[in-house]
Image (cartoon, rainbow, N blue to C red):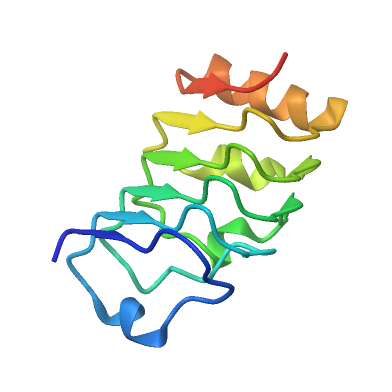
Length: 125
């Protein structure tokens, strides 16, 4: 399985998902996640969507949650205020979406830096 959509109602990730070694796209939209789930075991994961959840921060240790294979992230419609500079350390990141969050000015600076590295960045400016 390369693509999985778990739309709606989840507050935690079922543990069997972490065994899907070939998973490339994971959609966990419209759920109740307050934190980013630990997905580092998904070594082929390229795209993660956590659109419309309750996430408030992208933590300092972001690499402990996401594999460095990530190319696309969708965090639209959350409550994210703070984004860690760790997001700058993902070498394959091509596009990130942060529209409809409550980003701090420092977080917006980090996103501008990410954009200057060639990543497409979408957020409320």
